[in-house]
Image (cartoon, rainbow, N blue to C red; front, side, top):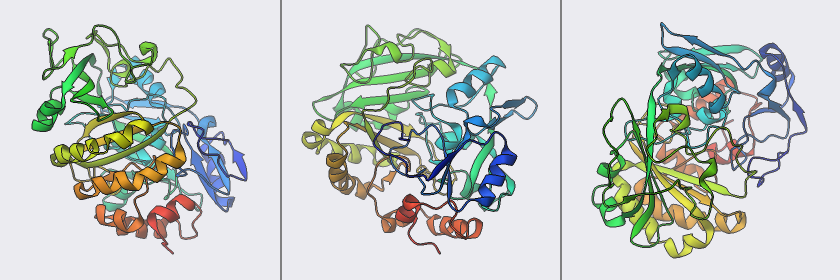
Length: 417
Protein backbone atom coordinates (compact mmCIF):
# COMPACT_ATOMS: atom_id res chain seq x y z
CA UNK A 1 0.00 0.00 0.00
CA UNK A 2 1.27 3.49 -0.91
CA UNK A 3 0.49 6.99 0.26
CA UNK A 4 -1.58 9.50 -1.74
CA UNK A 5 1.43 10.83 -3.66
CA UNK A 6 2.89 7.41 -4.35
CA UNK A 7 6.30 8.46 -2.99
CA UNK A 8 6.09 6.12 0.02
CA UNK A 9 5.27 2.42 0.26
CA UNK A 10 4.12 1.46 3.74
CA UNK A 11 6.15 -1.24 5.49
CA UNK A 12 3.37 -2.79 7.59
CA UNK A 13 3.46 -6.55 8.08
CA UNK A 14 -0.36 -6.66 7.98
CA UNK A 15 -3.37 -4.42 7.49
CA UNK A 16 -6.49 -4.54 9.68
CA UNK A 17 -9.91 -2.93 9.20
CA UNK A 18 -11.82 -3.12 12.50
CA UNK A 19 -15.56 -2.55 12.32
CA UNK A 20 -16.04 -1.20 15.84
CA UNK A 21 -14.10 0.66 18.50
CA UNK A 22 -14.23 -2.52 20.59
CA UNK A 23 -12.54 -4.49 17.82
CA UNK A 24 -9.95 -1.75 17.44
CA UNK A 25 -9.23 -1.73 21.17
CA UNK A 26 -8.76 -5.50 21.21
CA UNK A 27 -6.45 -5.29 18.19
CA UNK A 28 -4.32 -2.55 19.74
CA UNK A 29 -4.05 -4.37 23.08
CA UNK A 30 -2.68 -7.46 21.36
CA UNK A 31 -0.38 -5.77 18.86
CA UNK A 32 3.35 -5.27 19.09
CA UNK A 33 3.54 -2.19 16.88
CA UNK A 34 0.47 -0.50 15.38
CA UNK A 35 -0.40 2.72 13.55
CA UNK A 36 -3.62 4.15 12.15
CA UNK A 37 -3.83 5.23 8.54
CA UNK A 38 -6.10 8.09 7.48
CA UNK A 39 -6.54 9.45 3.97
CA UNK A 40 -2.78 8.85 3.32
CA UNK A 41 -2.31 12.52 2.40
CA UNK A 42 1.04 12.67 4.21
CA UNK A 43 4.26 12.85 2.25
CA UNK A 44 6.49 11.26 4.86
CA UNK A 45 6.40 8.18 7.09
CA UNK A 46 4.49 9.70 10.05
CA UNK A 47 1.83 6.96 9.74
CA UNK A 48 4.15 4.09 8.76
CA UNK A 49 4.84 1.03 10.87
CA UNK A 50 6.58 -2.31 10.67
CA UNK A 51 3.67 -3.83 12.60
CA UNK A 52 -0.10 -3.64 12.04
CA UNK A 53 -1.49 -0.86 9.86
CA UNK A 54 -5.04 -0.01 10.95
CA UNK A 55 -7.48 1.41 8.40
CA UNK A 56 -10.40 3.13 10.11
CA UNK A 57 -12.84 3.17 7.18
CA UNK A 58 -14.82 0.29 8.71
CA UNK A 59 -15.62 2.13 11.96
CA UNK A 60 -19.04 3.82 12.25
CA UNK A 61 -18.86 7.09 10.30
CA UNK A 62 -21.13 9.12 12.55
CA UNK A 63 -21.71 12.85 13.02
CA UNK A 64 -23.81 13.64 16.10
CA UNK A 65 -24.76 17.31 16.50
CA UNK A 66 -25.49 18.77 19.94
CA UNK A 67 -27.14 22.07 19.03
CA UNK A 68 -27.42 23.26 22.61
CA UNK A 69 -23.68 22.92 23.23
CA UNK A 70 -22.76 23.86 19.64
CA UNK A 71 -20.53 20.83 19.20
CA UNK A 72 -20.53 17.80 16.92
CA UNK A 73 -19.14 14.40 17.87
CA UNK A 74 -17.30 13.25 14.76
CA UNK A 75 -15.74 9.91 13.83
CA UNK A 76 -12.01 10.48 13.33
CA UNK A 77 -11.91 8.50 10.08
CA UNK A 78 -14.34 10.80 8.29
CA UNK A 79 -13.05 13.16 5.63
CA UNK A 80 -13.75 16.86 5.93
CA UNK A 81 -15.84 16.60 2.78
CA UNK A 82 -18.10 14.02 4.42
CA UNK A 83 -18.21 15.97 7.67
CA UNK A 84 -18.98 19.25 5.92
CA UNK A 85 -21.91 17.74 4.05
CA UNK A 86 -23.35 16.21 7.23
CA UNK A 87 -23.06 19.50 9.12
CA UNK A 88 -24.47 21.60 6.29
CA UNK A 89 -27.49 19.29 6.02
CA UNK A 90 -28.27 20.14 9.66
CA UNK A 91 -27.57 23.87 9.33
CA UNK A 92 -24.10 23.91 10.89
CA UNK A 93 -20.52 24.68 9.85
CA UNK A 94 -16.88 24.65 10.92
CA UNK A 95 -14.77 27.80 11.23
CA UNK A 96 -12.43 26.81 8.40
CA UNK A 97 -11.27 24.03 6.07
CA UNK A 98 -8.00 23.04 4.42
CA UNK A 99 -7.47 23.35 0.67
CA UNK A 100 -8.48 19.71 0.11
CA UNK A 101 -11.74 18.37 1.60
CA UNK A 102 -10.59 14.79 0.97
CA UNK A 103 -8.31 14.55 4.03
CA UNK A 104 -9.35 12.71 7.20
CA UNK A 105 -10.32 14.66 10.28
CA UNK A 106 -8.08 12.68 12.65
CA UNK A 107 -5.04 12.79 10.37
CA UNK A 108 -5.40 16.51 9.72
CA UNK A 109 -5.83 17.41 13.39
CA UNK A 110 -3.02 15.15 14.61
CA UNK A 111 -0.52 16.77 12.20
CA UNK A 112 -1.57 20.40 12.76
CA UNK A 113 -3.17 20.97 9.35
CA UNK A 114 -4.84 24.34 8.72
CA UNK A 115 -6.73 26.51 6.27
CA UNK A 116 -6.07 30.20 5.74
CA UNK A 117 -7.23 33.33 7.49
CA UNK A 118 -5.52 35.93 9.62
CA UNK A 119 -8.05 35.34 12.41
CA UNK A 120 -8.56 31.60 11.82
CA UNK A 121 -6.52 29.14 13.89
CA UNK A 122 -5.69 25.65 12.61
CA UNK A 123 -8.31 22.90 12.29
CA UNK A 124 -7.28 21.52 15.69
CA UNK A 125 -8.62 24.67 17.37
CA UNK A 126 -12.17 23.35 16.89
CA UNK A 127 -11.43 20.29 19.07
CA UNK A 128 -13.30 20.31 22.39
CA UNK A 129 -12.73 16.63 23.21
CA UNK A 130 -10.71 13.75 21.80
CA UNK A 131 -11.37 10.02 22.20
CA UNK A 132 -8.52 7.60 21.59
CA UNK A 133 -7.46 4.01 22.09
CA UNK A 134 -4.38 3.79 24.30
CA UNK A 135 -1.59 1.22 24.02
CA UNK A 136 -3.30 -0.93 26.65
CA UNK A 137 -6.50 -1.06 24.61
CA UNK A 138 -8.25 1.30 27.02
CA UNK A 139 -10.53 3.87 25.36
CA UNK A 140 -9.98 7.28 26.92
CA UNK A 141 -11.61 10.68 26.49
CA UNK A 142 -9.85 14.01 27.08
CA UNK A 143 -11.79 17.26 27.18
CA UNK A 144 -10.92 20.91 26.86
CA UNK A 145 -10.24 22.05 30.39
CA UNK A 146 -8.43 18.84 31.31
CA UNK A 147 -5.21 20.85 31.21
CA UNK A 148 -1.84 19.88 29.83
CA UNK A 149 -2.70 16.38 28.70
CA UNK A 150 -5.46 17.67 26.41
CA UNK A 151 -3.20 20.37 24.98
CA UNK A 152 -0.44 17.83 24.42
CA UNK A 153 -2.64 15.21 22.79
CA UNK A 154 -4.74 16.97 20.15
CA UNK A 155 -1.79 17.51 17.79
CA UNK A 156 -0.20 14.22 18.80
CA UNK A 157 1.43 12.77 15.66
CA UNK A 158 -0.25 9.43 16.37
CA UNK A 159 2.21 8.89 19.22
CA UNK A 160 -0.28 8.74 22.09
CA UNK A 161 -3.00 6.48 20.75
CA UNK A 162 -5.36 5.92 17.85
CA UNK A 163 -7.96 8.69 17.63
CA UNK A 164 -11.48 7.35 17.14
CA UNK A 165 -13.56 10.53 17.57
CA UNK A 166 -13.51 14.25 18.29
CA UNK A 167 -15.99 16.75 19.58
CA UNK A 168 -15.66 19.81 17.38
CA UNK A 169 -16.98 23.32 17.91
CA UNK A 170 -19.56 24.25 15.28
CA UNK A 171 -21.40 27.41 14.29
CA UNK A 172 -24.47 28.20 12.19
CA UNK A 173 -23.92 27.65 8.49
CA UNK A 174 -22.75 30.61 6.40
CA UNK A 175 -22.04 31.46 2.79
CA UNK A 176 -18.74 32.45 1.22
CA UNK A 177 -17.78 34.30 -1.97
CA UNK A 178 -14.48 33.58 -3.70
CA UNK A 179 -12.64 35.81 -6.14
CA UNK A 180 -9.25 35.28 -7.79
CA UNK A 181 -7.02 38.24 -8.64
CA UNK A 182 -3.98 38.25 -10.91
CA UNK A 183 -0.73 40.19 -10.89
CA UNK A 184 -0.34 41.26 -7.25
CA UNK A 185 2.87 43.36 -7.02
CA UNK A 186 5.51 41.86 -4.74
CA UNK A 187 6.36 45.39 -3.63
CA UNK A 188 2.87 45.74 -2.15
CA UNK A 189 2.99 42.33 -0.44
CA UNK A 190 6.33 43.08 1.21
CA UNK A 191 5.37 46.63 2.23
CA UNK A 192 2.31 45.55 4.25
CA UNK A 193 1.77 41.81 4.27
CA UNK A 194 -0.75 42.00 7.11
CA UNK A 195 -3.00 44.32 5.10
CA UNK A 196 -2.96 41.94 2.13
CA UNK A 197 -3.46 38.78 4.19
CA UNK A 198 -6.17 40.38 6.34
CA UNK A 199 -8.32 41.68 3.50
CA UNK A 200 -10.76 38.77 3.54
CA UNK A 201 -11.89 35.86 5.68
CA UNK A 202 -9.28 33.72 3.90
CA UNK A 203 -6.51 34.92 1.58
CA UNK A 204 -4.05 32.69 -0.27
CA UNK A 205 -1.24 33.82 -2.55
CA UNK A 206 0.09 31.46 -5.25
CA UNK A 207 3.57 32.08 -6.60
CA UNK A 208 6.87 30.62 -7.78
CA UNK A 209 8.71 33.60 -6.20
CA UNK A 210 10.07 34.76 -9.57
CA UNK A 211 9.27 38.08 -11.25
CA UNK A 212 7.81 41.28 -9.85
CA UNK A 213 4.28 40.06 -9.11
CA UNK A 214 2.44 37.22 -7.38
CA UNK A 215 0.50 35.49 -10.20
CA UNK A 216 -2.68 34.72 -8.19
CA UNK A 217 -4.37 35.92 -4.99
CA UNK A 218 -7.44 33.93 -3.86
CA UNK A 219 -9.74 36.05 -1.67
CA UNK A 220 -12.62 34.39 0.20
CA UNK A 221 -15.12 36.46 2.20
CA UNK A 222 -18.11 35.57 4.31
CA UNK A 223 -21.32 36.95 2.82
CA UNK A 224 -22.58 37.88 6.29
CA UNK A 225 -19.51 40.10 6.77
CA UNK A 226 -19.20 41.62 3.29
CA UNK A 227 -22.41 41.82 1.29
CA UNK A 228 -21.45 44.66 -1.04
CA UNK A 229 -20.28 44.50 -4.65
CA UNK A 230 -17.13 42.61 -5.54
CA UNK A 231 -13.96 44.72 -5.43
CA UNK A 232 -12.58 45.76 -8.80
CA UNK A 233 -8.97 45.33 -7.65
CA UNK A 234 -6.92 43.79 -4.86
CA UNK A 235 -3.91 45.91 -3.92
CA UNK A 236 -3.17 46.46 -7.59
CA UNK A 237 -4.11 42.96 -8.77
CA UNK A 238 -6.99 42.62 -11.23
CA UNK A 239 -9.89 40.16 -11.09
CA UNK A 240 -9.54 36.97 -13.14
CA UNK A 241 -12.12 36.90 -15.92
CA UNK A 242 -12.54 33.12 -15.82
CA UNK A 243 -12.00 30.38 -13.20
CA UNK A 244 -8.36 29.68 -12.38
CA UNK A 245 -6.39 26.72 -11.11
CA UNK A 246 -3.37 27.52 -8.88
CA UNK A 247 -1.21 26.00 -11.63
CA UNK A 248 -1.49 28.11 -14.81
CA UNK A 249 -1.48 25.09 -17.12
CA UNK A 250 -4.23 23.19 -15.27
CA UNK A 251 -7.97 23.22 -15.97
CA UNK A 252 -9.97 24.86 -13.16
CA UNK A 253 -12.76 22.28 -13.45
CA UNK A 254 -11.92 20.63 -10.10
CA UNK A 255 -11.50 23.95 -8.26
CA UNK A 256 -14.22 25.45 -6.10
CA UNK A 257 -16.54 28.08 -7.60
CA UNK A 258 -14.89 31.46 -8.15
CA UNK A 259 -15.98 34.70 -9.89
CA UNK A 260 -17.56 35.96 -6.64
CA UNK A 261 -20.52 33.54 -6.76
CA UNK A 262 -21.85 32.95 -3.21
CA UNK A 263 -22.08 29.37 -1.96
CA UNK A 264 -21.99 27.26 1.21
CA UNK A 265 -18.83 27.39 3.30
CA UNK A 266 -17.93 23.77 2.52
CA UNK A 267 -17.95 24.52 -1.23
CA UNK A 268 -15.83 27.70 -1.08
CA UNK A 269 -13.29 27.50 1.75
CA UNK A 270 -11.38 24.58 0.17
CA UNK A 271 -9.61 25.31 -3.10
CA UNK A 272 -10.71 21.98 -4.61
CA UNK A 273 -14.17 20.50 -5.00
CA UNK A 274 -15.16 17.51 -2.89
CA UNK A 275 -17.00 15.97 -5.87
CA UNK A 276 -13.68 15.38 -7.63
CA UNK A 277 -11.20 12.83 -6.33
CA UNK A 278 -7.72 14.38 -6.31
CA UNK A 279 -5.12 12.95 -8.63
CA UNK A 280 -3.14 9.95 -7.44
CA UNK A 281 -0.25 12.26 -6.58
CA UNK A 282 2.48 13.29 -8.99
CA UNK A 283 3.60 15.88 -6.48
CA UNK A 284 5.43 16.28 -3.18
CA UNK A 285 4.75 18.82 -0.46
CA UNK A 286 6.64 20.81 2.18
CA UNK A 287 5.41 23.59 4.46
CA UNK A 288 6.88 25.89 7.10
CA UNK A 289 5.06 28.13 9.57
CA UNK A 290 6.77 31.12 11.13
CA UNK A 291 5.71 34.27 13.01
CA UNK A 292 3.56 36.45 10.77
CA UNK A 293 5.58 39.51 11.74
CA UNK A 294 8.55 37.84 10.01
CA UNK A 295 6.67 37.38 6.72
CA UNK A 296 8.41 40.12 4.66
CA UNK A 297 11.91 38.96 5.57
CA UNK A 298 11.08 35.28 5.06
CA UNK A 299 9.44 35.93 1.70
CA UNK A 300 12.43 37.92 0.55
CA UNK A 301 14.72 35.09 1.64
CA UNK A 302 12.74 32.58 -0.42
CA UNK A 303 12.64 34.95 -3.40
CA UNK A 304 16.41 34.92 -3.25
CA UNK A 305 16.25 31.18 -4.02
CA UNK A 306 13.84 31.58 -6.95
CA UNK A 307 16.37 30.49 -9.55
CA UNK A 308 16.83 27.19 -7.69
CA UNK A 309 13.16 26.81 -6.80
CA UNK A 310 11.54 27.15 -10.19
CA UNK A 311 12.96 23.91 -11.58
CA UNK A 312 11.66 21.89 -8.61
CA UNK A 313 8.43 23.72 -7.90
CA UNK A 314 4.90 23.38 -9.24
CA UNK A 315 3.65 26.26 -7.08
CA UNK A 316 3.94 27.73 -3.58
CA UNK A 317 0.98 28.91 -1.51
CA UNK A 318 1.28 31.61 1.16
CA UNK A 319 -1.38 31.55 3.90
CA UNK A 320 -1.97 32.79 7.43
CA UNK A 321 -2.92 30.91 10.62
CA UNK A 322 -3.92 32.36 14.00
CA UNK A 323 -2.23 31.16 17.18
CA UNK A 324 -3.39 28.23 19.32
CA UNK A 325 -2.28 26.45 22.51
CA UNK A 326 -1.54 22.90 21.34
CA UNK A 327 1.99 21.87 22.23
CA UNK A 328 3.10 20.55 18.83
CA UNK A 329 0.94 22.80 16.68
CA UNK A 330 3.17 24.66 14.19
CA UNK A 331 1.15 27.77 15.15
CA UNK A 332 1.64 27.22 18.90
CA UNK A 333 1.36 30.63 20.56
CA UNK A 334 2.20 32.53 17.40
CA UNK A 335 0.13 34.15 14.69
CA UNK A 336 1.76 32.57 11.68
CA UNK A 337 2.43 32.85 7.99
CA UNK A 338 2.58 29.46 6.26
CA UNK A 339 4.81 28.92 3.24
CA UNK A 340 3.64 25.83 1.39
CA UNK A 341 5.64 24.27 -1.44
CA UNK A 342 4.14 21.82 -3.93
CA UNK A 343 7.09 20.14 -5.60
CA UNK A 344 7.46 18.19 -8.80
CA UNK A 345 7.91 14.43 -8.18
CA UNK A 346 11.69 14.73 -7.88
CA UNK A 347 12.13 13.45 -4.34
CA UNK A 348 15.90 13.03 -4.27
CA UNK A 349 16.44 16.51 -5.67
CA UNK A 350 13.82 18.08 -3.41
CA UNK A 351 15.29 16.43 -0.31
CA UNK A 352 18.76 17.60 -1.33
CA UNK A 353 17.43 21.16 -1.62
CA UNK A 354 15.45 21.25 1.65
CA UNK A 355 18.46 21.98 3.93
CA UNK A 356 19.23 25.05 1.82
CA UNK A 357 15.62 26.24 1.99
CA UNK A 358 15.48 25.56 5.74
CA UNK A 359 18.75 27.44 6.29
CA UNK A 360 17.24 30.46 4.55
CA UNK A 361 14.15 30.29 6.77
CA UNK A 362 15.91 29.37 10.03
CA UNK A 363 16.48 32.99 11.15
CA UNK A 364 12.71 33.47 11.12
CA UNK A 365 11.85 30.53 13.40
CA UNK A 366 10.25 28.31 10.73
CA UNK A 367 8.43 25.23 12.04
CA UNK A 368 7.76 22.40 9.55
CA UNK A 369 4.35 20.86 8.91
CA UNK A 370 4.55 17.40 10.51
CA UNK A 371 2.93 15.55 7.59
CA UNK A 372 5.15 16.86 4.80
CA UNK A 373 8.78 16.56 3.73
CA UNK A 374 11.33 18.36 5.90
CA UNK A 375 14.88 17.93 7.14
CA UNK A 376 14.85 19.97 10.38
CA UNK A 377 16.83 17.99 13.02
CA UNK A 378 15.53 17.05 16.48
CA UNK A 379 17.67 19.62 18.28
CA UNK A 380 16.24 22.45 16.20
CA UNK A 381 12.67 21.18 16.64
CA UNK A 382 13.20 21.15 20.39
CA UNK A 383 14.28 24.79 20.23
CA UNK A 384 11.26 25.77 18.14
CA UNK A 385 8.67 24.16 20.42
CA UNK A 386 8.71 25.28 24.08
CA UNK A 387 6.72 22.17 25.16
CA UNK A 388 8.75 19.71 23.06
CA UNK A 389 10.32 17.96 26.05
CA UNK A 390 6.95 17.85 27.79
CA UNK A 391 5.52 16.05 24.78
CA UNK A 392 8.34 13.51 24.85
CA UNK A 393 7.58 12.83 28.51
CA UNK A 394 3.88 12.44 27.70
CA UNK A 395 4.74 9.83 25.05
CA UNK A 396 6.85 7.94 27.58
CA UNK A 397 4.00 8.02 30.07
CA UNK A 398 1.24 6.95 27.67
CA UNK A 399 3.17 4.51 25.47
CA UNK A 400 6.05 3.18 27.57
CA UNK A 401 6.65 0.18 25.28
CA UNK A 402 6.63 2.24 22.07
CA UNK A 403 3.62 0.48 20.57
CA UNK A 404 2.75 3.56 18.49
CA UNK A 405 6.37 4.34 17.77
CA UNK A 406 7.97 4.24 14.34
CA UNK A 407 11.03 5.48 12.48
CA UNK A 408 9.46 8.89 11.98
CA UNK A 409 8.92 9.51 15.70
CA UNK A 410 12.41 8.28 16.52
CA UNK A 411 13.77 10.68 13.92
CA UNK A 412 11.85 13.81 14.97
CA UNK A 413 11.53 13.25 18.73
CA UNK A 414 14.84 11.51 19.30
CA UNK A 415 15.27 8.67 21.84
CA UNK A 416 12.55 8.96 24.47
CA UNK A 417 13.05 5.74 26.47
